[in-house]
Length: 569
Image 1 (cartoon, rainbow, N blue to C red):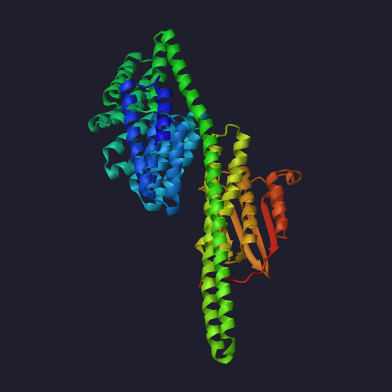
Image 2 (image 1 turned 90 degrees about the vertical axis):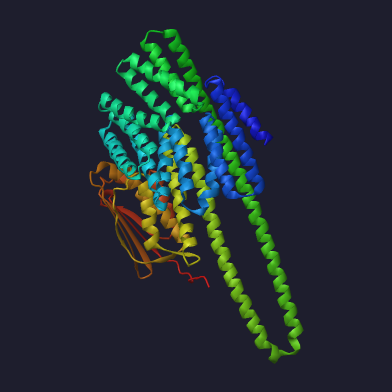
């Protein structure tokens, strides 16, 4: 508790320049109350209550502008909840993180969290969550349009916001409908500013009716920005004053809203010729942006340290469990030997009993070993998932595109390995997986990662069970080939196509992947890391692989490894 309160004081020192005193004090009072609730939940040992308190602390810190601490607590909440499967609570965490990241302009990271939130809501059929997530996707595509001026992004934004509006009208929640009108107005302003202003004013009316202070602030700030764009400074000043008044009287407000207010004041002073005041506001805005960048760096280091310490503790626990299991098995073996020595004089009478006992023990050990293997697959899957989350978080903070692309490719490779262990854990065979289920799930995951959901692969698969060692190598090869198609084939085609065939002939497995891309030159085939990795993995399989038809067709054949089938008893 003392350490957390110390963090709170540090945050107070950082924020005092930007938020009004009464708003700051109220925000810190709320933070202190949540910290106490968090400590109580930790003392009880209730993991679900701890997860909820971590979520609330994440919201409090992000609202105060402390990005690194806010994200740390949100990540803790996810670590507790994600192993339990999709839920509304997990979607809420992703949605809030995405909303905050959007407010501070981190749209690439926000899109990642929006997708995860939408996936959770769809899994549990939570219509209000689906409506909110699609509205946030519309905001992401609006940002992409601003950045690239590519009309397809504006069309996507309009598509998602119309879908969100239809959901909101069915649900009939006025706050949600106001949010949709606000987002709709923002997007329409890219086409016609006055049309956007009319829609946002409609949203503000709904916010006023609901006394929705935070959104009243957002709506009036948006109107301020739009009126400044058309040089209507009188109207801009009117709405800016209202936003400030609501913030000061309702004692609410976020770090992101404060940044927008500072930006609007700076532009207002600039357009009215008050250059000195404009410069002062721009300096404040620059300092706020510098604080966020600093917190990003500190947060990245902190998360790596936490993950490292967690993995060390998990490794120690696993080692101790193995030692305890070995000790118990040794004791069991000693008891068996003692029983056999005592019964040596009654060979014929006791032989049947001993055989029966051995049979029972063997059956118990088989069940136990099966459970241990299943648990091992589960732990490997969870550890790989943890590594995936860590890589995903780290990737989102990289600025260098080459490094970021390399990290994203590494992330896909880890996810391919994780999927193997997921199939092992979900299936009833301990060391084998069915390629007819594994391949579509892997391919669809890669297509989603590259936002190529419109591609509908054509599969020609038979039920083939292969050993986990071969499955890992095969999964990585498929990952590399499909990744190449997503990067170099599909972007050049108006109607991208993909077909995948996997059959077994005379104990040999034949895999064929065909796309309709332009292919590539033969002298480039062995220069890239991905193609070198394919060659190395093919050698691990003791097979042969080749690109045919100028790179449009990939063919792989290898001999299936023989293994005894293991099923849970």
